[in-house]
Image (cartoon, rainbow, N blue to C red; front, side):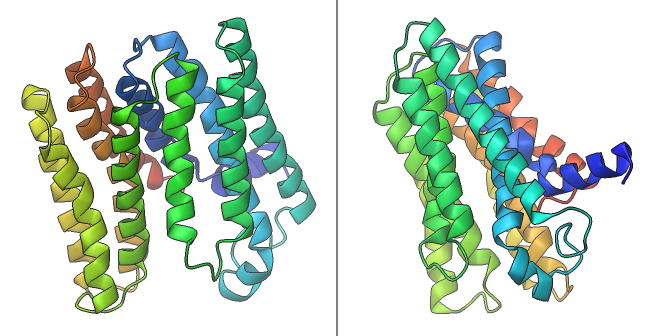
Length: 295
């Protein structure tokens, strides 16, 4: 396999098109913690968590290789493009690298072990989800927990407080992701399970109303998030064979819009500008998904 071909396989395994949502998670976690939104800090933690996300996606394919061989034989491992051993090695290596970066930065910044512990918890949650998500009724919550721990890791890495804003924002994100997963699995949108999924998706909207948004930017972000969810539901109600994956990638991109809403209501210094920046994660994710599949 040529270097270019291997790079393409790695990009596909890592679902790198979804990385903008990871970057906005980091930005949001720092804003909710009340820390200063300094570009170097956002970039460093964003890099570390990006490595962990990509590593987790590698491990996801490695753990799912037997199921993919039956249901998705075109995936890199069952199609023979790469070995499971290599994917496991790269996945764990990237996870470890992310933890080390966060831990070393926390030590050098005088923040003690909190950043290292938070990133280690994130790494553990990622591995647990990857190894135990098939047939696990709690897998949507476990996946959401991974994203919540990104908020926590970003917050403590920036020296912020794990207060009510981080907890509330984390719960809003958790319910969004539970609803995302549940809705995507439904074939009948009028079923009881599907209606409960809509209830989960409603939580972030109700939570965001509980505090003023940062002017026009916050209002636009709120409306954009609502439009994203409505569009995904319309896709699911359609008859196209690819309606479920299209809805899923749309809702994944919508994570950046939720981050923007939460930043806008945080009251942090520069919240309006940070929320506007987070909103850009939505079109960027959708654009990147046209090149590299997000699922």
